[in-house]
Length: 405
Picture 1 (cartoon, one colour):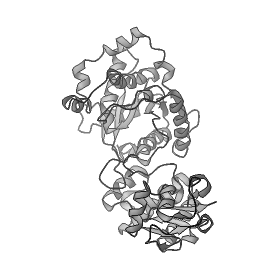
Picture 2: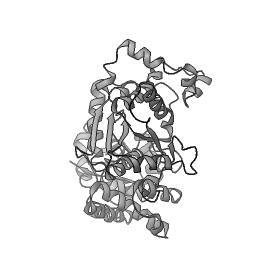
Picture 3: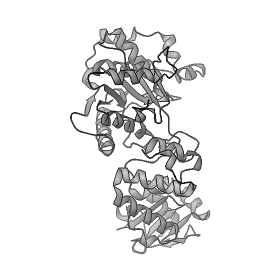
């Protein structure tokens, strides 16, 4: 593996295994060494939302490593499969999206991926799976269904749990792993990347490549770990509020990452950076700062990262006015329905820093809210709009906005 250090870093599993090899990764390594052409490395993303978080970036970074090694990245935008929704890990059926919603989400996804992937034409092939899936007729769909039994499908994690709990499973959900697998047939994938929760779907791709007689060996599966969120306990997820988004501003990104629990630091360095782990600072606080500075630099550049670090320090020290890169919140746009003077907890609820006005009241009463560095204790204190313009509202150490006209 010495010739491919980027392949070993942060990998959970590579399959299929080499029966006579003590190292299962050697099977793929042998393929990398023997190939006379760039391998086609597939990664599928379903644009079911508008944002990508750092957990999603792990597979993207590995895809970039393959690009840098001379291979072809094949990014599948699941504009067709997103309208069904991947049932993996879901306790109930997913909401189906419209074509317009999916297309809009796809555009934002690609914009967020530009700092990660090499978009050169010879390095990246972007495909939309509606290109082939929307053309399947009923005979072809029946043929696709015939490649798998109900028992095999129910063995899929999630389906099995829902079946035992008598939670409805709809027939269209059975189509998802088959369609994701068919993507591998359509693009002639040599390797497919995915999280550890995608093993079933990737294995289906191998089966379908064999079924359709695709030229060459069926694809390898390369599985990557699911990143725990900022809470240190659950998988990073926007719905859980423990995520760090790729499109967040430098200061927001920095502030979240410099508070990552000590137990996750090494994993975050492994998955989100290329820094040598043996060279990390001994002091845990220094590690947090280095992680934050490194990741922000990757997405926003060195200057913005340094400004974010300085602004974060200013906020911690209570010098909010010096934190020039704080994200802004327009009073006119977000509080147009308020009658000023307005109570502080109502204003705070409108900023998006709290889940609701009642949550804002609790945050103020708990001593977590500052206005221009001064702790606020009275949730019912009245403010005129003009008194708030230019001030920084802060909730805890990670959430803050500057109020503007």
